[in-house]
Structure formats: C-alpha cells, structure tokens
Length: 379
Image (cartoon, rainbow, N blue to C red; front, side):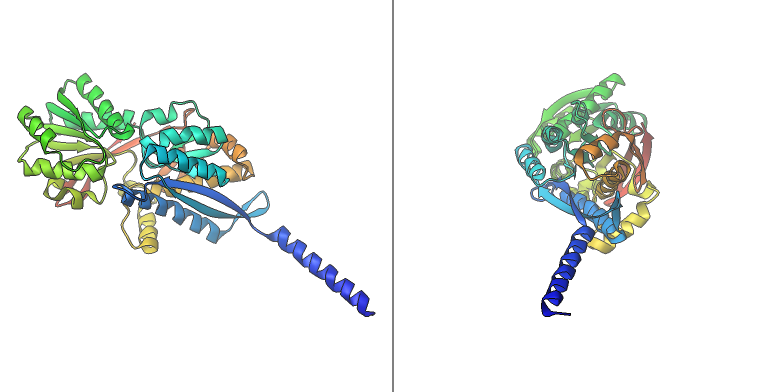
C-alpha cells in the first residue's frame, strides 16, 4: 500500500473513531436546586441540597438511559439566602443555565415569587418544603410540592392542642414571612373555629433575636400555649427566652422549628415545644432507616428535616423523564400530572394544583432535647 493510501486510511479511521465517540457521549442534563445556604436557615438549606445531591450521585452511578441515550445528571445548586428578591434572581439564573427542572425553593417566601419565572420558562419546580397554600394556587402547570400545606398543618396543630393538650387559650406570634404568617393564620382560623380563646396575635420578623418585649406582654395574658410561626433560627431563641421569663405556656410551632438543631437553639426551652412536620416522620417512612444510613455515611451528619423530600423530588423528575422518553423540559412538564412514584417518603401522586393527594402531618415533642413522635394525622 502506498504512503498516501495509508495516510488516507488513518484519517478515515480517526474520523470514524471521533464520530463514534460523539455518538456514545453522555447527554449532560442539569437539575437545579435552591435553598438558603447562607443566613439563619443555612443548615436546613444544606440538608436539602445534600438530599438532592445524594439522589443524583446514585442515579449516575447506576446509569441512566432516556430513549436510548445515556444521560448524566448534574446538580446546579444555588443559594437564595431565604430572600424573595434573591430567589427571583437565582431562578432566572437557573433558567439561563438550561436546567430541565428545579428542586426548591425551601421556604414559601422564596418559592412563591420564583414560581412565576419557572412557569414562564416552562420548567418544572418541585418544592420539598414550601407549605403556604398560595404556592400551588396560582394556576401554574409547572408548580408542585411533596409536602402537606399550612391549610393542613395549622389545623392539625390547633386540634392537637385542644384535644390532646387540653389547651383553652392561645397567643399567636408570626415572623412576618409568607411561611410564618401563613401558618399562624391557618392555626388561628381553626383555633377560633373549635372554640379556643385567641388572646392576641403579634408580629416580629425573621431576623429578630430578642423577643422579651412580646413575651412579657404575652406573659400578662397568661395563655396556655403560644403558637409561633417561623423557622428554628428565631423559634429557638423565642422558646428559650419564654423559659427564662418563667412562662408556663407551651410553645406550638410548625415544621420550620421542628428540626434536629432546635435543642441547641432553644436550650432548656426545648422540652416545652410541640411542633409539626408537613409529612411523614423519617422513623415512620418505609425507606427512612435505609435513607438515614446512606445519608449519614455520605455526609457525616444527621438529617435536619427535608433531605428525604429533595431526594425523592429528584427521582420524581427522573421518573417523568423516563415516562416522557425525553429530557425536554416541556415534555417533563407534560408528564408530571400522571406521577405515581413510590420512594423514601411514600407514594407521591399529585392533584390538579400540584399538591399531594394524600398529605400527612406528624406531631412531635421533645424529651431531654431529643425529638419524639407524638401523633400522625392523615389528611
């Protein structure tokens, strides 16, 4: 064979090799995650991100094929600092990054403003922890959540307080956020309906550290319980200062307070807290024990609260891809309503708004600073 022929054969072989490599290359698909990674709720935000990351690492390790094409998932993690304005900026960044879906945001106050941006872009958004009813009442086809709502959580707390704790009178305090105010309002509505005496409703903010003025006023009202709508970063000091003032009232709170970090934040006021989670407790989840072991091995820390929900949310997105036989965001949106996924948190099916068809509320108390399940309410 002539030298020129050899060169031609070599070039052809290289071209064929390159073409095969292109054909066999994995398609990289980005899934966004948003939570506060800075600020008072950063520990919960990182917990949520870890859950999503664990799912993506597992799926990539097993190998994912969509419609005959190998797919590698990539997490696009963003920090909204728990701030509504930052949340919209981050949402636009994820749209510009061409993510196919977003797991987040963590809070109602960030999830609600961000949801319009995802809707306009036609990108699925699954919040693992936003509980304000407004989030899914906007008519967006892209908006979902994998937790119960405050319209379920507030009444569950009020009913438990009245029927089990035998509370007769309550004071209400909220942190002026979409989450805290929404939960407190839902609680108050039910409390009044079932005959509890609501003595007052005060507002603080999510950056407050000193609650003694509000608590001193409430102490004079002498309620049996105080409902606090807010996160653990404020709810912990609130409970601690109530204890320091010698108040007898129990502290009622929602999922934002019901974390593994509350004992460090509330000190000797921890055992005075009764709180709710907008889902099944980890210890009652069918896959909870196995998930907890995997999570702690991978990240070397305990689960805060909603990591199992972000983990399942990623799998729900991938389930929609498989059923759609596509990674096209529009086809993922079209596949989402038919979701019927069994994961760590149980079976997930959605109603026409994007809410769970079968929400669950778990109620917890604390003994010697350790969280203990009190009751499970199926909605």
